[in-house]
Length: 140
Image (tube, rainbow, N blue to C red; front, side):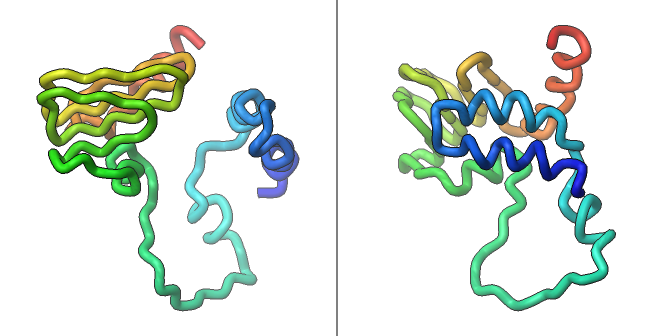
């Protein structure tokens, strides 16, 4: 997808710097939302395949992403500054400054970023795209 390369280069140039978030917000929105399979692999004529000894995870949801986060012994997967009480089988990710506290929940996903908070039943995490589409159409 050569038409996306310039935008991606702008993100790469800012990776690990104070301007990273701004670059992602500015340029990533321009990149077509299409899987690498459809965008590149199905169109490429010079592809090679080789065996690999690592596990693959198509990190397409909070459930799959959280599989790489530490577990607390109560089936909670945690990322960032988080404090839980009487909570089990939850995914809690804090990508912002400050603390996220969760009390008495089960089978829930809580994700906090700099400007938004997502709270949903764990079995509804696949509906995040529906929510984002609705938000994009109505508010942003």
